[in-house]
Image (cartoon, rainbow, N blue to C red; front, side, top):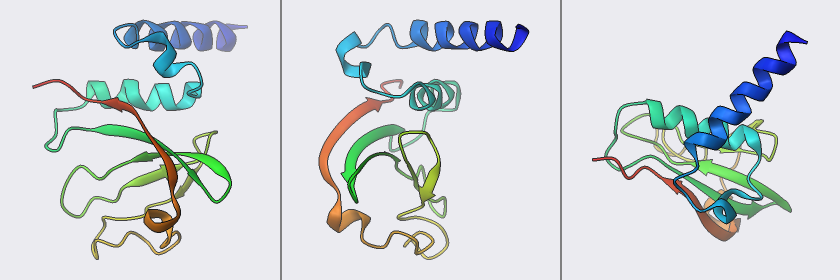
Length: 118
């Protein structure tokens, strides 16, 4: 009972945080991706700005969060926010080798969110 109330409060908070964006921009975005965006909003501003992108990759909708800097890996999630791989970044700059073809095979690019803070 308490867990479900906390979950509802969290969902409400996420929805309030995304109110400044157009509602249609987030209509098909999974709640777990919205939660990741909400977390990015609480972190320090980065250069380049943090962003979340949607693609089609290997027959599924995926969400890509580019690396913020240097040796940090980028993150590629499925629609349930399970980490698929890190396509780039890391020590070698080429990710961890689990989805070497992501940049060649991705389609239907859509910017979901970009940090506009200064």
